[in-house]
Image: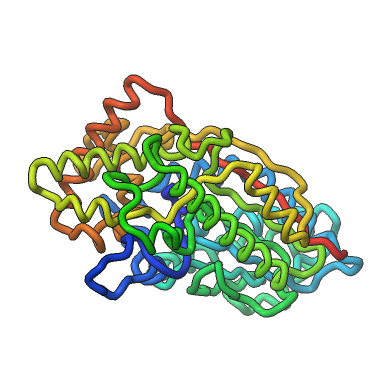
Length: 412
């Protein structure tokens, strides 16, 4: 899920304004996150579709929260809904995109059947940034609609007479754009889902962009980063998340629900390993390539990732300030860096843990790194990265921390 928005750590998706490189004296036109960020397209060996097991695990840990809130959204009004609008923000592409929709529709159909009510017509909005591989998603829709038709005909005879629309009462559409801006009409959405996306910022923090390179030799927060860098990232996240919540408050109906799942941390320290060490290892590889003359040091110094793994204190501060939502629950889960599954390459070779992690990261961040460093170093960069990750994980138990928030809009 990533924003890429749509598009997901690196997982997923991002959003809007100023991009990854720090500002330069030469006056080069700065590309925005929205323009350059997307998951790797297609179904090849380095594609997101083939390297998204971590994101799949993240969706799994949030499944029960999603099921509970979609049922709440279905039953929250006094009158049984004739139709429901659902949005998946940062949907990305590949199998995970339609998996989320399937689980949501399954929950709606099961609840309708249990209560002996006609299932509402469903409008599902798949959102991600403009560069997202929507074509791969759309190519998968015929099989999705076939499944919906079979399920609808088997489980919900109430609506059979109306099923002239692909055989189901579910309509799927793509909505390209940043989820840090308005995407839908006011009071039109009943349920919002977002997985592996909100750790992507709308831009690199302005305080870093406007000054000289404050975080030399690093791509993100690290133990050596000055406090000003930590503060700038925290403030950027708060501003972005506040903006996100204010906009969703306008788009959701009263009593509408959201399940938001994204990478975060358990500690107040943003430089703790669970929150940033994947970036630290990537920076170490790049600096080694600098020492060999393969990468310009200025290129490393002029890149900062538009990413932030928040703690719950920062999230609750934003929710209290915005004020439109009730936080029903918040859970934190540990996620293996490599997805916890064995994976084979196209040559049927069993990949090492380091290789699996490297492919997962590459599928998400390559578009940003390639735009800044050039495509010619990508293979070597991620080969070295896989070796360094393998060594790190042989001596350390570093995991991602994934936060799952369940929220309900006030006012019903």
